[in-house]
Image (cartoon, helix red, strand yellow):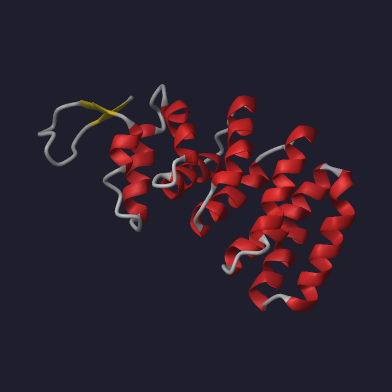
Length: 182
């Protein structure tokens, strides 16, 4: 449970509100709302425990993956159990935004041998997306996966070579960026 203060209707009182209950109020667009939720909840004792179950709930996936990405971008880490829960949730991500957020979390993670296969399945699926951002980050994900697991080097090299020849300039730019940072 998270303590919320200063929200309309609470009259300055402290109220204990589940993360899920707060995210119900999200309009599906406001990054400011999600930033506020993150700032008010990150220090809470149960923030990550409340967050991870929401990754598999379609109506909360976009917000939950955004919050997780923000958490990792802020330099925080997640436990091995939480990383395993994230990898398991990849197959249930429905919308392009939640897929993109999950892909953007990958650079913060060390993928175990057992997690490599489901991660590769997710990446392959993302390469079929219409959204160019998702495809661009999926190619980057293959590059990262191949750096951690030699078994995926040949596939990553072939996919990236194909992308450099056939994908849009924005996707090729993302591939160049990933190659430079590694």
